[in-house]
Image (cartoon, rainbow, N blue to C red; front, side, top):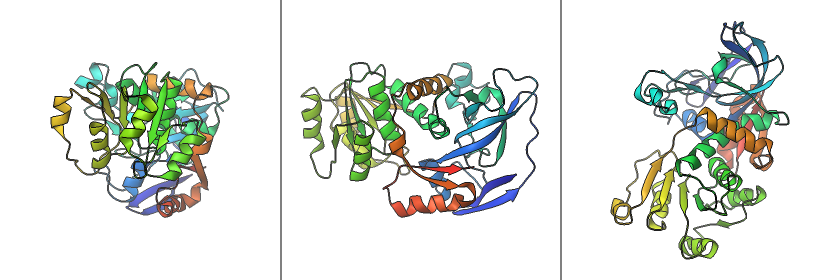
Length: 339
């Protein structure tokens, strides 16, 4: 079978290796879709601080069950599945206190351990989830980023009846906004300096948008939410300017969930955080419950994924997919690799 390996930043090689022999507690998955995410691009640029080369990427995935280990239950050959890409130790404090997703020795497929960018992938059955009927291969490959959004919102508390500001309308920000509505938020305002991303937000049903380069963000917040402003803010960019906007525009006592990945350390006005009793909450990944909720929302038609899929590339043009993302300069959402 073919396997795609990033041997160094910007370089992908294809190798022919044997199809993995499925172990007793594993599932062999015939891979069908791999989504390219922002963290993959960091690896492509050699800027991911926790990834070394060579590495097999692929963590936003879907496929079909090809074979089962003798101890596995609950799957049949041909089932469409997705894979939770977390490898945890099961022994550290987070793992033994219900927080395994932030394991002290966490390894994520495609970053600290090899991912699924190959024709067949053998993985522990505990990390494989059968998707509900009616969910397509494309949708199944996006369960992972939807789970990121679901978990981020959970970190901010129950959003039922809440007014939610999302700063950053890329793939994750868009999904955060959609998930907020699906989970009961009464109003959602999407902010971004990209008109393309704001257009995509509207195509996905997120009607309230603002471009802070064109309109005053504070005025837009009051216009949509009223003078009480947002009940919850989620920063989905990972830049000093946007976390500054979140803090400056937060109502006293508000929670700000930090979803964006910061490449550079920002200067943050902790004086305002202290004076206004703001809560800055981090969010990293997800747990199985977030995956199940993500699948539930997708299956119910409450998350619109079709407008977010910008392009498909065959497996042997993996590198071309990265080049399209580079050339688009932000005017692109999700690119899929088809196997």
